[in-house]
Image (cartoon, rainbow, N blue to C red; front, side, top):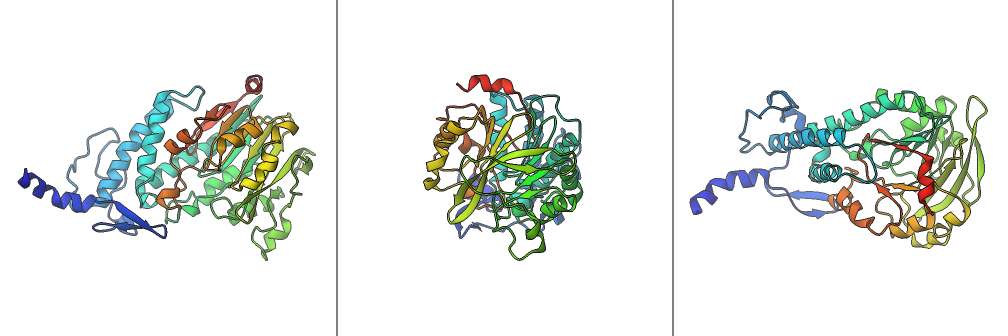
Length: 383
């Protein structure tokens, strides 16, 4: 037995992972991965052969970068198969939860955003979503895409809304962000961009600039990019609970109604927007809503407005209370697995399952690039 343990020591040292966190930075036992793992880790298929084949290397002694990347590749193969066969739906098949929990394991490795396999997964998922978004709009109801972090795109027969859309630079790893070209294809299909607050995982100056160049409104708080030329062209709504205000759109005389609820994350103003489309559908996106004092109006949203879809940050305090106050037809959570956050604040999918157990409305959990077709028939299930 002692000989067996001794023979394992090189492997244990090579693949040791985080033992603690200090100021959000991982402390490693043994060698940390290369800051540019693509130079030392084979990309998918380079040595492993077909995606469904057996890895010919088999041995990863003293090469933890390669081990972690190949481990992610193998897991992603299973995840992709499960997500393809079990699309977002209610009630949720157990297989979907299995896939999301597998993703948690990959994304909670400290250096995940630097791994080629993780970057490839992100690029592929968002590229596929962009392709879908450029397709025909739904004939009724809405198509809802969840992109990276807390970004959503909502498309109805007449309008397409973007919420907190970024390229993913907040992950903090070279090569992780989606290309300008891919995100531009999404922007080109959208009519308006809502930015909840200035944090980099919700606000992307390049994305906002693309909207502005096309004459499309960008709706945000005045704290967004102070002193920049772009700021003067941003639409600043009146932050007032329950009060609808018109928002004209470019081209065609269409308009939305918007309630800009006065939310907060600490001392930072955070718009919680409730958007009404020409079809009469309504979508609420919370940004990083976090302050307990705001329950003064959160508890009363449903008394003033009917909400179809609530898209809350998964870690918002007392999420079940938020859901009761808004009383949407359906909840689609966001902000899981922001890879730029420390491990303890990456917000795993399994944690969202735990947090939403007591919610009195249907909750749908999705990963990057997935879509869900919402039908107003869900409204009949609210009361």
